[in-house]
Length: 211
Image (tube, rainbow, N blue to C red; front, side, top):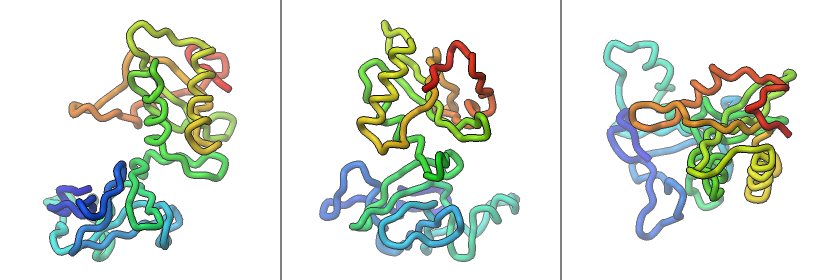
């Protein structure tokens, strides 16, 4: 894990300290902390937004004072990424902090559900967002199917169960919509904000397969 703002990789696996699937542990010379949504530091094993500091950190953005204030918190740089730290100090990416969803009082990372969905043989791509319906946040998955596969209520139920079998009990899509494609940036990253902005949940929407 690294960024332009830090001019260096600050979290990495090594030959002697390797945990496949994780971003590794803090690189010597850098300190990492996780900050929970209430602003407190997550101690030991836990989750939160990743903050980092070290000698290569930026001083400011050129002529972008507001952005500088939003990411520099004293001696710490706010990455905007949410991570989980395990008992051995390895960091596991959960998604962008802005994309996290709080469902039934529990934080849900869209990346975990998307990864599970993409392991289904019929799924080519998946994007997960939180949508508000009846004053509740529900998880909605947009699914692009592989060639030759067709969306249906039956497949939507199968995908929900697929996630339940592989993730925590609250990590599954309440709503499933099959799409021809997903909005992306020029570099190929899914634009979840575009899905959220265009989303208006309707109980009788024929393309939305609900629980």
